[in-house]
Each structure stands twice: as structure tokens, then as C-alpha cells.
Length: 256
Image 1 (cartoon, one colour):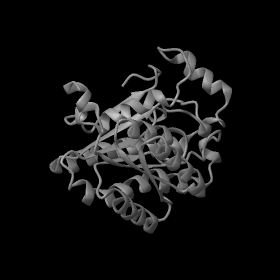
Image 2 (cartoon, one colour; image 1 turned 60 degrees about the vertical axis):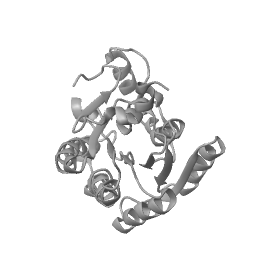
Image 3 (cartoon, helix red, strand yellow; image 1 turned 135 degrees about the vertical axis):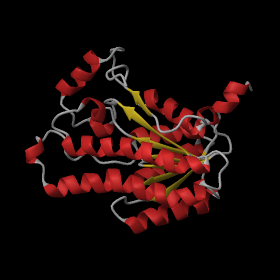
Image 4 (cartoon, helix red, strand yellow; image 1 turned 45 degrees about the vertical axis):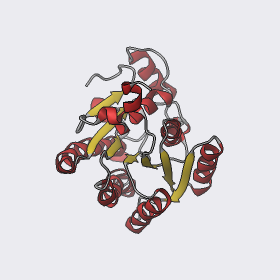
């Protein structure tokens, strides 16, 4: 194996991926397992999460399902504890789980309860999961945190305010955490995908899909595999001196 290939390998790495039951999270889990990682898939969708973990294990990898409800701080603590029990430690955390809930509504049509739910899951949940994971990440010689942001926060997508604001917060949180955790050799970066063609984006109007496709430098639909390689890179040894960065992965719809 070449030095570059070795640096991109995740062999021996223990990675927790939130929202890993389906969509992008499941793709990240599959890519991490393919790169050699042992993975914990955390999700509120228990049946789907178990199915995903079983499929990856049957394919020759190691994947465990752990329950997670990001609206419940106690569930977050238990999720990390269960992950440590299953994997024996932690080298990487992918904060992928999120809700949208605000799509298609103008800013003055949003219910306060919707706003609070989006912020509790996407922002508070990311913070609390990271907080619970850091004591274990500190024990790793090459710990990584990868946060899932969104390019909607970079171009200011309309009629999606709660989600856009939450992802803007994730970007800012990534930068602040990179400063705080760099002392311990832990890198913290964010990936900001464009509109990815997955189950979770089926609600998006066709006009928005067309806006993305036609506005990209690479004019095609974005698929999960476009993002998973970047996540694996950020989890790997190759990204050991990359921290506090936001990487838009959107085919050139937004340059950052």
C-alpha cells in the first residue's frame, strides 16, 4: 500500500455516525466501513438503523446500531456510552443527524415549535453529542470530528430559514470547536453539501432541483457518493492538519 493510500485508510478507526440509518448517513457508514473503520450507527429510526448495520456487517464489515434521540440529552449520553461499549473507544465522530421541517415556508409562517425543534436537533444536538464524545476522542492519537453543514447557509436559501440558520450555527460551531479542541490534537471540520438526491430531499420542489443543477459548474444531480469520499478524507490521517474548515461539496454551485 502506498503512503497516500495508507493515509486515506480508516483501518482500526472507531467511528460514530449520527443519523446513519438512511440517506447520507448510511452512505457515510458504508464508506467508512469500506475504508476499514469499525462503525456505530446512531439514529432515532431503530429498525432502519439495525437494517443498515446488519447489511454492512453481512458485507464483511463491522457496524453496530445504537439508539439516539437528539432531542433528549440523556439519550445522547447513553448513545455515546453504548458506542464505547461496542467499539472500545472512539477515533471519529460524524455529526450528520438533522431535521429540516421548515422547507417551503416563508420566515413569518414558521411556528415557534418548529424553529425550536430544528435548533434543538441540529445545533444543540451537535453540541451535546460532541461534548459527550470528546472525553473519549481525547484518548485517540488522531481524533476527528466532522460536522454536516449545508451550502444553503452559504448562499442563503429562501423559504428554509430554520434549517439554514441551524446550519449556519453548525459552521460557526465548527470553527470555535476547532480552536478549543486543537489543544488536544482533535480536528473539527464541516462538510457543506448541496442538494443531494436522497430520500430526505424528495419534498424539495422540482424548481429548486433545477436551480441547483443548472447553477452548478458540474451540471448534474448530486448523489451521496459525491459527499462520502470527502467525509472519509476528513476522518483519515491525510487530513491531520486540516481543521476549522468548511468544505462545500456541491459541484460548484457555491464557491467558498
